Image (tube, rainbow, N blue to C red; front, side, top):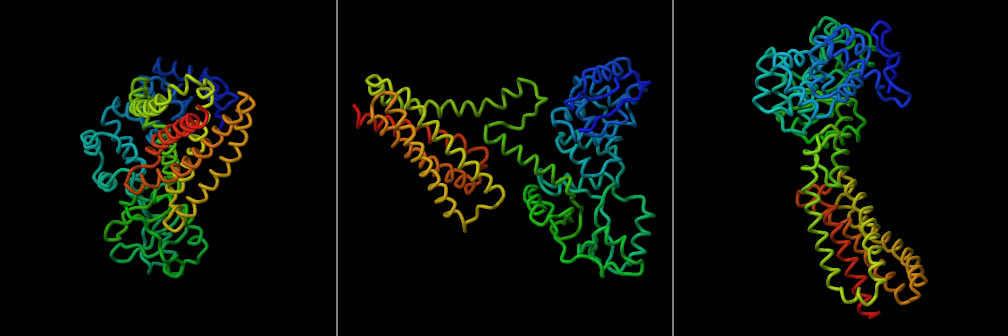
Length: 465
């Protein structure tokens, strides 16, 4: 976070941020007062030096009504690219509150990838109303991206590209870029295309600028070019960037014709989104944002908790089978959560590694068996070590050596089951087309709880009672 200072004549505090890097309450109050008083000059002075990401942070700290008022008061000084930095919920609320004409005016000057990012979550009718007010040449580019399915490379691409033929020389290419009014705001390489507009190579900007003017483009271009299909899943596109250390990549259609380009900054957003989605899925969270209200948040979390309720009842029914054993030996009730809990933790470790390996395509058919046996041996080694420890503790605690042996044996068995399930469950879910990051946890918890209770109470019933 950068510290931004406001102008002295604005009446704002000297520093926008406190020592921890957050916006100071005094600064936020000054912005709020400027909005309340409709003081455009003060508001512009307060916000003019803020980076887009910082302004987005400020907008999220305002209440819903003031967010819209801030944008309207800033007018032409507000860069709609800021809306790509705010939570989805906040962005949707702002777009719904702003006049269609204002949104259209704000989007027409954005890079196509930013404009599509803002438009894609709106209903089709709202999209059409906004697009109808955007110049045709911009509208065509935006529709091209919006026609691709959600979460694909085509949705992330920038339609504004610099494409040149291979027979041009360096001088003509540089002159073309200097004279053109329709260049993208940021680009890192030129894409060389054949007469059918199919990419045949790329030229990094640094190489272009270091080469003499008479040299032909096809003499300095990199081949072969690595292209990405527009309908490719964005996570797969991110994996290609990671594997080949790309800065940008050409996006092509079904006929391998150039339709756009995707840059590393968009891929970073994809990686962050996919990682966040996987983390939320592991604990049963949906697409909720920190800015969502409590009703929406509760509703999005309820289904997962409802499923867990039934799996918990299944585990409780297993305990109910041994109610007489529990009445005879209270120590069993004290110790049985240990077996289930340790199994759950061990299984979660294996599951996390497996889900990650599936997501990064590191778990292929060639090494599934090796990884499975590795996880099983890890579970066995940890199980035996922990079984000895908990066995000794239980024996001393309840003065019963046989009880220590029973809980030790049950722990080893449950950790072996947990290690197996932590690997097999995500792999099977992935094979059948389910998202292992979302569905694995509930199955794994059920398995380790049921097996842990049954193994411990069953062995105790057979050997001790």
